[in-house]
Image (tube, rainbow, N blue to C red; front, side):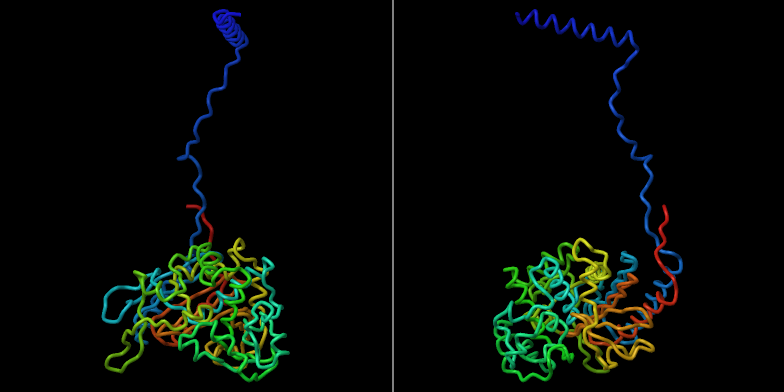
Length: 411
């Protein structure tokens, strides 16, 4: 059949079909209209109820007055409730004598608040089966040896993270502060006489605690700082967080540390130190209030894609009792606390509070949260002061005594 005849047949078919549609009244469907986005209902937005707004306004005024009274140069605060960051703000200045203000993204050092990052990071690998809480540390890390070989074989990851390995308090913290690497410090633990059987007594550690870094590095073939960034900082959007001296020094928005000099001069700025960046899990993490708000959301169980609530519960389970009132003295009617894994725990009249504090190089940090209630607060300051400890219990008292939450309304 020629090309001309084929073309003629096609035209004839088109004409026949068109006539049929016209006869039957069937019309081809018009193309689908684009949705009118302007007419779409707006998504509902979370807004605070008036009572919480009033409370946060009063908190801000009172906190500001306290900073002035205590001569604290700068601070930053993050508060979370019900899976939302409800408050984050900077106060004061980054450096005494300099007008540059602290904001919610200003970087501070966390000190021992870093310990909670190490336990949570370990929990991620427990979930993946690379690490077990009840497995001997020495099986992961041959260099980890204690004065008693039998106890060496019994000390588990859980003992390491709860400061109950049997070592005396602050074993070789001096070597950490002298800048020795963990590779040089850990083998020396064998020389230290033990004071207790594993699990029996809390004896706070920095060098031994930081051995967890080497456990995770061995199991993942990745350095600890990279693990922090890849598994915690990046997924949580903690874009101002880091774990090195160079990072904080090169930050364009950092609060300088201060120490008290005299009544006349008050608190004066000092240089940022390299101390504890050789033992990051014990005191080497840097972060802002905005970062800590995201961290609190994870800690209160609102990042299940990163870590499960069940694993967090394991981490927060009390392991050893602390009878010293040093850590509960600001909580009315609370006379003792416990240590879990990287966290202290207390019972605030039926409300479980998980918390930790940190001090390093002229910085002070405090973090506390009630995982079952979804409430948390972190306070960062650039000097040494117990002022944050006096503030935090009042925040929990407000939420404990009243039923306040974020209301969900359409706007």
